[in-house]
Image (cartoon, rainbow, N blue to C red; front, side):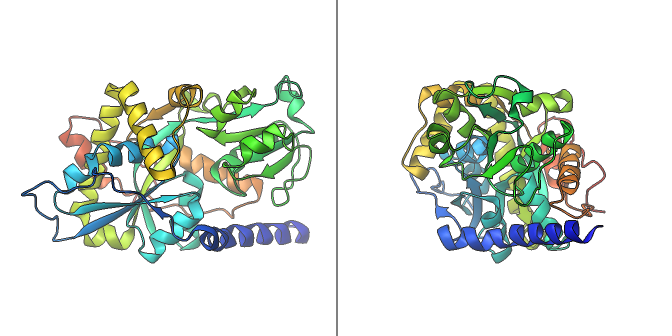
Length: 369
């Protein structure tokens, strides 16, 4: 590897490693989800494994709607009996991984890139992916006055949520596929990749400091509500239009010590997804209600309606697509070739699915032995 590329790679990895500290300084280990009665323990129920509580983390994103709805409708608490479900809401993957490492949460809903980074940086000791939750819900939205076709993206300023995050890697890989060049660390090149927090991306779009963004829902639909145009749905780049956007992870220590609790949370997740898919409108309203509880704001109809339609809620972690996303990060220079063997343990999920009469899911050869 050339010296300058090696230095850039080390700097990139160092910055990614520092992100948890930067995020934690800003918001701690995540804000506690307000208890509106959905986590109340049913009378006469018993604790699982004698455990008082299980700490569950998720983002305030629609791509984490399984966790939002499972919390709001009490699906997790129902399965946990007298073991109380406690929730923490995060803004970014690195802070959730740090919380998992510290024991501040036990189980979390999280994107693929933080899962990969967390697993590889710990040399395979800190987490397991135990299930899937969602596919899709990511779009390239652009200013139609400045960008009228895919080729017009060259020379423009496109935002992603964070250096090395799932959407950042996807954009860098797409740019490479166009034959264009971008320095992954600085974001400078044939396209200017501007790392911008999802909270401020709509304002950045309105004031013209970016020309578009490769972002998850509901940010993508917020941009459309501001006059943006969907130029590309990332699902169109994947076989069967499916790719993992949200995983369920658990600390290996907690999985080893409390498998029955983990199984109960997974059962709650499967039941939640079943209910979401059978009751899409009510589920959308439930997710929005939990967003309001957690953040003080609900999404308007012109944002949540199109956003909801672009997300598939599934139990399959789509393991082969996670492996492909890791390969994209390596190609972009943001990750050394990882050893992902053992990142999945789908034993308990498949047990739950079998009991529900559903087909088992595959770990693409990346499961525990």
